[in-house]
Length: 115
Length: 114
View 1: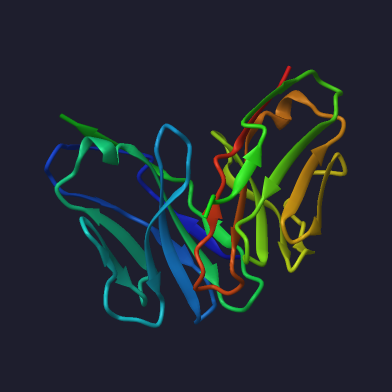
View 2 (view 1 turned 180 degrees about the horizontal axis):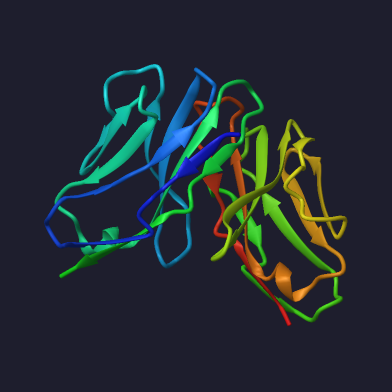
């Protein structure tokens, strides 16, 4: 079975500091993509960052970056210079290869950024 | 682009009533997904379509749930009869086919069954 595990139900960080959210996954596929989504209190699901499994280089989007360790099946999200607007639920997800794969989500980590 | 459009945004109904949730995917996307989100179970895939054809409906809880996609620009999720345990936020999402394409989500429908 394909699964995504986020072991930190809740985290908090001081504004302007750095925080890392962890994610591990399990799949027998070789071809897949990994994603982090953000869900603020408005409940909208917003794509934060995407990583191709066949690329060794870690993806970066402004203050957001990932640490992708394929052998360990680990995909953590680092948020630098945390802002109050980063307060949200963060979901790790992956999508397997082929044209029919769906997106499998972890349970999420609730991040609170404190002033 | 207007994004994925879901309606209604909120729905309150009584147990036993029929509920219909609607979704308009992003134009050009050929995959459409229905997810349900609850505190206890997180985000669960109910069903997804490729080119209007249901591919995997194993997540549909029971026969009370049905989903249709009559054309590329419209899908419905129907619950009949509804029960209090169906209370949740229901998301529709669309994407291009293929693992590289991220899903784009609508704003969800919060369903409350009393």
